[in-house]
Image (cartoon, rainbow, N blue to C red):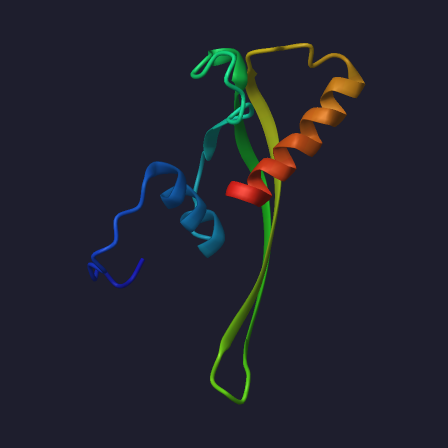
Length: 113
């Protein structure tokens, strides 16, 4: 990303995927898996709490501004269209469940990326 220059910072798998999405350099398949029920203590690590999805379309916009004091502000908008590949709790035929799933996934990606 940085002309093959090592910055000394290591990215985990989720961070590297988000970096590629944000930079617009993601090519081909982009499959992500996220835990929906992170805060629940009932069954930590339960596969029914995870969702896997494929990003099929991406729109991003970026606006960078520098104020007179030299502070940099970046406004970044990333709109993803995704297809759910796997969801442990299923019930994806129900439109209400699908609508709720869309809201929760959007909030999850907004909060944690």
